[in-house]
Every structure is written in C-alpha cells, then in structure tokens.
Length: 400
Image 1 (cartoon, rainbow, N blue to C red):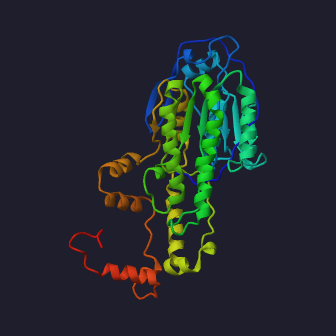
Image 2 (image 1 turned 135 degrees about the vertical axis):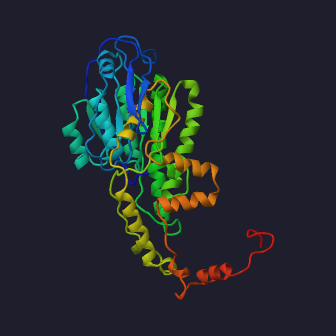
Image 3 (image 1 turned 90 degrees about the horizontal axis):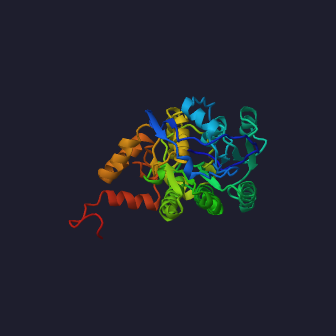
C-alpha cells in the first residue's frame, strides 16, 4: 500500500543498439531470494533492421524514494549491448517512490525512458534530470485532467507509431485520508477513483493500439488493500479493487493479441508523506458520535505503522522489471514480507480471524465516543447500546 498523489512525465534521448543474440538471463530479487529468469527471446521483438520496440512505463503518483543502486549481471549487460530493439520506457508519476526508482533503474539498464511528473520543476523531476542520462524524457501530466492524458498519449504515439509499444506500467496510488469509511468524505472516494482507476484505465485504453502492434506488456501496481478490507482504507482499497479487476479482465481479453498483463501487489513501503486535515471537514454529528480522540488515535497508529514500513524499494522495482522483460511473467507479484501469511488468513480462515489480523497488523481503532460508557451519546449510539444488551433471537442475529 502506498499513499501518494497522482503525477507523471519524461525527456527524450537516444542510444544505438547492436546485433541480435540469444536470450540471456536476468537476476532479480522479488521476495528476498535471488532468482534467475530468462528474458524474452528476441524473436518476440521486431527483428527487421531499423525496427524498434518501445517500452513505455507509465507511473502515476510517486512517493519519496531513496537512491536505488543497481547491480546488473554481466549476461544482462551483454544482452543490452547486443539487443536489436530500442526500448523506450515512459513512466508517469516519477516525482518519487516506485516510479522514480524504476525510471532510474531502467535508464541505468540502457532503455530510453519517458517519465511523467506533476510538476516539471519539482524536486523529484530535478533529481531525475541530474541522475539519469539524456535517454530519459520528462513529461508533465495530471491524471485527473483528460487534456493532460491526451497530450501525453499524443506525444507517445508520435514517437512510437513506427515501432509499437512494448510495455506500459500503471503505478497510480493516491490516498491522503486514513479514516473509517463513514468519516471519509465522498470527495476522497471520487479522487481515489479518478487517479487510481480512471486515470490508469484511460492511459491503458489510449495506448492499446501501440501495445497490440508490438504484442507488448502491461504491468500495473495495485495493492493488497484492493483484496482485503484494511481498516480505514476504504476509499483507497475500493479504487485498487476496481483497478485489479479491470486489469485481470484485460489479461484475459488481450491474450489473443499476445499481450501479457501482470499485477504487482506490494507490501507496505515508505513511498511518500501524507497530509490529512479530516477534523475540520467532519459534520458536527459525526464529530460528536466518534470524537476527536478517535480520529487522532487512528492518525497516531498510522504514524507508528509508517515507522516500520520498508524503505528499500528494490523488490518492487525488480518485480516490475520482470513483468516487463521475463518470457513468461507471473500474473501476480507479491513483493514484500508478510504477504504470504496475510493472504493465507484471508483465503482460508474465518472472516473474524482475518479482521482481527488486519487490525493487529495495521490499525485497531478505539471505541467511538458515542459507545463509551458514561459519555453523552447520540440517538444512534443509544440504539447500538440497546442492541448490545438485547438477548439474541433464537433463530440468529441476522433475523428480526
């Protein structure tokens, strides 16, 4: 799960590539173990002299990322020097986080990168200019603005019409509110859907003609919050659930075209800072029912959770890279620790066990003020209290 804001961009660069060779090996680290995976045979790429396949990485929403040192295997360096295809990665939302780390990673590997950012003069954009080669192109894009998306699509199409598009990476991950669904304004749900779902969907649909012509790849960064009901993440989780479902649908529908679609579901990483000003916007009725202490306690628990979040983003970057370059990429990648036990509990144990686990792992809110003994309650809280002291009906709690 990453909390962050929508963005994207890129600058142009060129670089000659050499002659064809057999597919070498690429060493990646997806779950903490060193794994060797074969790269796609060059026969899947255009083989005629002068043709090129474009690798487009569109990252939406970037968070803060530390410098990411890359150690490439000698065999992969050899492949880079001998490959016929010129790959043009384009990443949206490269101000920080997964997008910025991946943009730098692919630039070091020798790919031509298009990277999108919300502000071309932001610190993240300046850092990319300084740390990457002239192969990297910065593009300004706000995923909530159709005109920005269309301008980026036109730029990409103008530079890839003759080559096709090998890879698209969607990395939208906006969320700035950690609170119960009832306390989260509807505007937060709409913003999450606009950035995390509709923005990625519009980009994907706009680039599908280029992807189909190359038989390329789509890699989308989603979240376990889209699979499980994490407390206080309803808006973010709902948008990621929609994103995961539509990408799974694309995976099935695009198979005849040779396009492979992968989902990345990372554990919790430190990808940026979150600003929340919830109390000032709460209606008086909700503020009375829940109380300021309830909201502040959630915020403090989230701050404590952030302190143990992983800072090394390399596992996610490697998963994205494998999804783009492996001959047979996985349908889903789960970079990060603890996801195995989390999904086991989610799929095989009773719901109440899953809910207890998620509260213990993430956020476990205290009782709202309206449910505390001795506190003046609202009519809703009084009704809840009466229900709590009412003996259950012999035919079950769901009958009235």
